[in-house]
Amino acid sequence: MSRQRDVAFLLLLTLILPSFTSAKHRRPADDTPGNFDFYLLTLSWAQEFCATHPSSRSSFECDTKRHYGLVVHGLWPQNNDGSYPEKCAPARPVAQATVQQMLTIMPDRGLIQHEWATHGTCSGLATADYFSYIQTAFGKVQVPQELRVTTQQSSMSPSEIEQKLAVANHASAEAFRISCSAGELVAVEVCLTKDLQFRECGPAVCDCRASQVMVTSTP
Image (cartoon, rainbow, N blue to C red):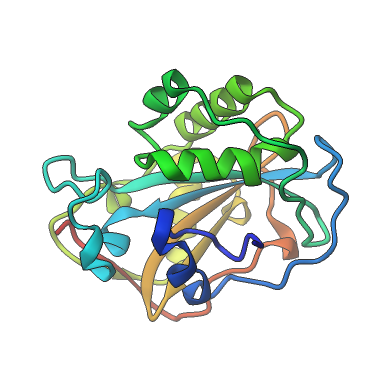
């Protein structure tokens, strides 16, 4: 399965993939672990996922008492030419202690297992180190107020969202990309070097083409 914005969690994975406007066909990539150019940190907008998938309302992620906003979907090895490796080595199940530790920022057990098997095995890192990298990467990104949990819908252009992220993180707006579907915010993607510094995404990562993006409110 390619990484065409595999933002769906667990059994709904295949229903979400086609909706990402930033999706692209996979190009062949060297699957040697650790052989890639940069990381793509993908942060899913939980409200959009829960609003468009009523059957998931009872899930951990969609628990209205928790009110998630941006949550980690994955940290993906990526190449400058747009290719990306996947499933680079056999993957043992992620230890339950690690899964439990990750649930606060990556609220789906099946997703955690999937991300390690599909993307983590290409990082060249041990399992615990890969998830530690995810925690560090997520902790590095400062989320502007407009992308925190909100009870009101708002509308912004993709470039406006990227600029707000740039200001909040003292980084170039080129380090951020927006994924959208039918004019709704789906995810924020952050381009990071192998040592987790912000870097320009370049043409390897597509952007949302909508003129305005609706930021869905908390259910």
